[in-house]
Length: 324
Image (cartoon, rainbow, N blue to C red; front, top):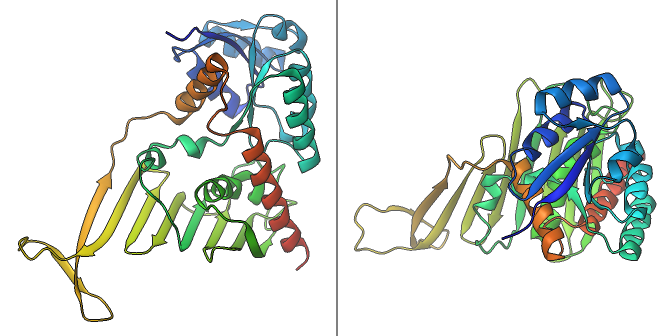
């Protein structure tokens, strides 16, 4: 049986509260306490969660072996560096850092101090995606829409780093090929950075991914559609459900089969498999993965290197937008 990892949370804003709350429910983790620069808020959250509010980061570090960092992106490097230098394992929300150089610095620092660092790309633990983990995916074309109503939270970074980066990370995890060509456009509407963006990513193996992200939508949408030879995969991250449509050779014994004739006039059978009502909490899943990685001294599902790679591609998309 895995031992409980003593963990603390740094930053209890809207997202940090969720991290702290769910950490109280994880069998592999023991929430020791939290720190937030707003000490009054920290005390209020601790009363609700029956945990301890620490008056400084250093005092929290002295009592834990791992940290969940949920502070503004601009602080990630400095906060994570303090934790890593004290030999603490680090879970850090996306975007990992403000620059790729900062991410590389933390990667080297973690190697030196032999600690595990995991990135909070929560959609990797979405049940709609986890349900497809045993499926062989070889995409030819991917279409993604991630739309959200406007919220002041997250506007300290462009929509590419706030929303699109989730899909960049997923796409890089399922396409085993290097980026060959990139084009993008976007615009500022209500904040000082792009609020709407579109990117077209072409890979060396021929796959093309078209990503659209907006934080000014009237309704929420988080959908990915994957097209590959003889099959179509639809993933709804918001509703945590997915669907696979396969086109196979027609079995004439099945008189109730749905069929279609392809361009050569050959009759094919359509098979649909749905995954829905999947009861998995993504925050719980990612923190369980973090705790197990610490216990087993093994790489987490979302390593800091993969977080760095997603960040690097996100910045290249932003460079294309800025060059319009």
